[in-house]
Image (tube, rainbow, N blue to C red; front, side, top):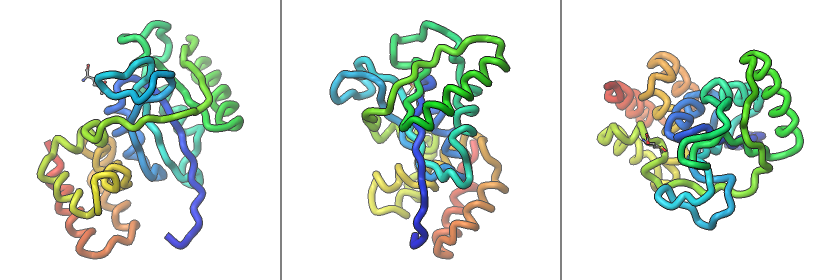
Length: 212
Ligand code: MHO
């Protein structure tokens, strides 16, 4: 991409990270998603040995298309942050990792707005973003991976597994299989990506296999 692009990042914990991966991954304006562990102090967490970390999602987005405030509203509207105790200690707490002062202020503002709407207090833990440990590959784009054949086809468009995991295509298709977007919307977006003809055709064919 020859155009310098401003990107921004957002990191949230909101329960099992498979669902948020489909929610945010489906949004035009989201460039990349990655699920992992954050917010704790234990070293090198894994899914089986999560320590005091929380399942989290790291979102890379284009602020010209989507604002951090939009993401914040989706964050609070898609999990229950009113509880003061969460199942499995810290694994599933409501967590907001702000990247800078502006994000912290916006988060406080939208939190107050959402509390007003709900008539209840939100118990989300706020922390400055420090470190994010990506989860194992099989947790990335989890629902898309259930479609083994289609996943293989898409993986072949990329040089390696990391490039597949970090792709916008994988993020969108992962949302698509959970019906976060329609076939029409996703085809239109793919059209605008300006992919080489054969890749676009392959992708569109694959979409028809991504149905339950
Ligand atoms: N399926 C699990 C949650 C997985 S999520 C990655 C469960 O329902 O316990 O934590």
